[in-house]
Image 1: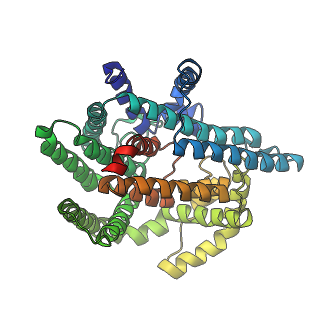
Image 2 (image 1 turned 90 degrees about the horizontal axis):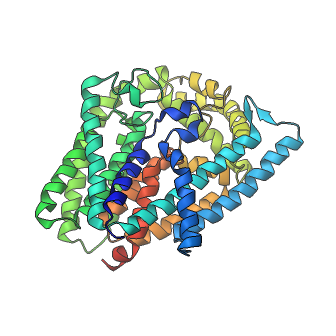
Image 3 (image 1 turned 90 degrees about the vertical axis):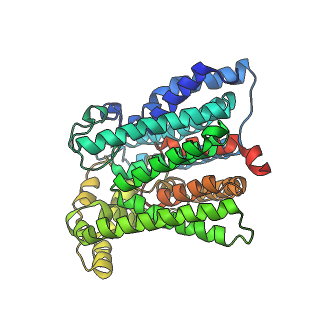
Length: 433
């Protein structure tokens, strides 16, 4: 029934679980259980079977259909590479069974596909006012967590995280601060989009609250990746707006807001992060690890244009990392006149824990190769054609694309898939607006 209050409550819990990305089950089950969405798998399967066999609902969206085909293709590629290694007598890599790793990798993709289906089904049964209420409720909860973290660092809310260790930056309910930016961007933008369907008398106050929430996060977060991505996203989006010869009053106002955000983010980045950049390169491992793994992945992709699947990639990636170390040292000396700290890079080649590309899109390219490229091109054309008349949604897609290319994973970043479901569910209205 439309507007079911019990379904609304379930949806709020569902979104909270989507943005909770440091769940304790990761210590027992593995990375796939870092989000409690893993526990929703039986619910996903039950609702799929119910919709298919009881309600005879066979509807499938473009994103869902193309993603399903991609999963089939990647499973075929992955099976070939795992069987190839097994026939060579390599059943394990370090302490990881290659076949089990392949199955786990496929399960990531299957859960994402079921998540897309499930979130679309829920959104279709709720009113837009209720969706707004759910978004703003979760955003408010995260605002409270942000305030608590600010006053209790470095031991903020340790009981909610997978490891009881001090952490010195804002990370909300995620494993690290760099994961929080996409959550705030998506929740603020979806709240902003759906606020127009709520009470008009409260429209201005709600938009002010959403803006204040985002600006507060920008001022408090210490994620360098987020600031760089935000600055680049604003530049790319502003250029796309300026190229449009017909600028409405709303578009001009939006450009002014973006300019304010751009100036704020740039000032914070220059004053806070840039002075410590050289020190980070020599004494910390984040940048060298991300860049090193990315270069190694690009080498593997070049040699295996159809990808290596969701199991065998750990073998190829580890070897690729070792091969590119001399080149990486020379690159850092040439670009930054500094010797990189490669301790973490060497560590991940001796264990399968953390052995993956830190960029979600490049991780999928490593696994799916040409198939992943075709998928992302088709999705980009489709999503940008839908959002071309909605500035806020278009900006969110630009931000998520750049973030996924550079520093965040996408396998358990369920807020990304929630955004896609919201765009698809509003396809007709967005195209007609």
